[in-house]
Length: 294
Image 1: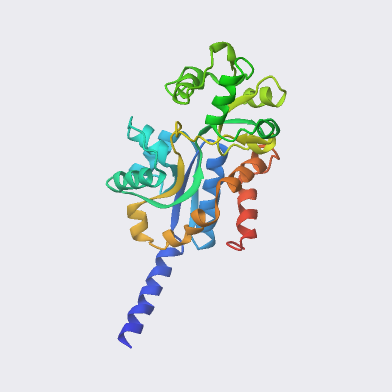
Image 2: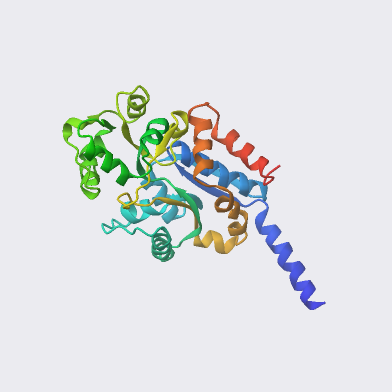
C-alpha cells in the first residue's frame, strides 16, 4: 500500500510539473530546421507542454541560446558541433564515433544529445539520375574513372564556396585522383547550379544531401566512397537541467529518431520549398499520418 501511495504521488507530481510547463524550442534559419523545430514542438505539445518557438536563428545564436538557457531543445548536426562549435580540424569518418564524441563533450556543457537519426545533411556530388544511370555511375570513384577516360567532357557547376573554400572541388578531385581543370568548372550562385544541371549546361553539381532540389530535379547523389565529405548527422539536443526536470521529454521525442530518415526529410523539405506548404502544416500532417498526434 505504501508503494502504491508513493507511485500515485509521483504521477501527481509529474502531471503537476508537466501541465502549464513552457519549453523553448530553437531552430536555425533554413527549411529543414523549421521542419525539425515544428516536429519537436508538435510532439511536446501533444504531451501537454506549452511551446515558445524561436525559429529562424543564426546557427551560432541558436547554439548560444542552448548554452545560456534561453533555449531548452533543438535539433543539431554532429558535424556542425565538431567543426563549428569545437573547431576540430581532424575529421572523424565513423558517424557513431563522431556522435559519441560530440555527445561526451556537450555533456560537460550541460547539453544532452538524444538518439542519433540516420539523416545526414552533408555535402555530395550529384548528377541527373538518367545520365548517371546511363553511364553506370554510382560512386565518386566511378565518376573519377569516367572523367579521366573522357577528359574535358564533364562540366561541373558549383557555388563559389566549393570553388575557393578549404574543402573545395579540387581537393576532392585530388582525394579521388580525378583529373579536372578550372576549365571544367563553372562557378555560380547557389541554386543556379541546379538549373544549370537541369538545362544540360553542366553534368555534375555539389549538393546538400537532404535538399528538396534532389527530388525536384530527379538527381542521383553519388556515394562518397572515399569519405571525403564530413558527416552531419542529426539528433535532438536538450538542456540537461530541462531533461532532469522533465525526464519524460526523452521518450516523447523518441519518434524523431525512430521515424525520420533521409528520404522522408527530403520529401518534407520538398513539400515546403517546392510546393509552398508551411512547415507546421507539413509536419503535423506527417505526425498525424503516423498516429503520433491528433
